[in-house]
Length: 290
Figure (cartoon, rainbow, N blue to C red):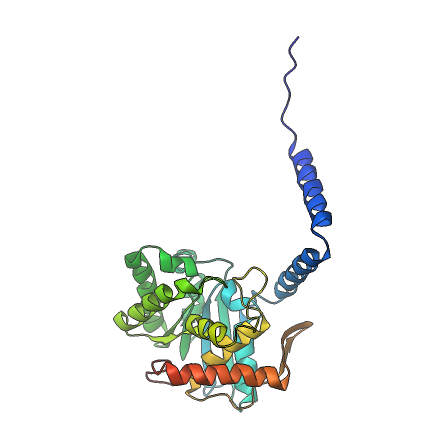
């Protein structure tokens, strides 16, 4: 009699995967374990606040009103929250700050769900809308990328008369040779769509080249760490205000999560990199402001 061997059940397969992972874990030793544990802890901590929509809620007419649209490249260590802390430390007035962020989301995805359009129109008016596409969109069809970006920009200009800003993304750490293509694509789009550019991807590449000892990414080499997000927030502050930050905070917290924790020397290094980058790239921050 022939016995048919049944495939393992999902529970058994999961058990086998876990056992294999445990064996690899034990073989790899403590270094890899510590790295993975740190990354997992970061993700768990970030998820406590990452998707909150309202980050600053002033309803005063004179408040600076900023809406962010994007994905985990923005909400990892919460660049918008860091911007709010820098703005206040630099003597800024009332602030209204919200975000529409979804993990891994593209502009076409945001357009399909309709949530961005709803927040844009219902919670306005806005002074600025910062638009962060997904990095992979840069390497897709240029016409489709331009179409989706143009549609988002049209929504912004129609719904709130805000000034749209394109937030340039980046390649993974160690792959900065591909950043030139991203940079050229974003600069072409900014010119063709008559939109100002926040060249954060170029800034991260510049920082890596000028100070390769700095760690600006998490272990996945894709998402910015605390310092990488802080550097981006400094750049956004400059683009919005037209001023170099003079005394941004050394430590930024939200609830139990530490977003930034710098020494005076580390902050000075990041500010120096931003200043040097702005001196080299005169196009950053050009255009009318609020």
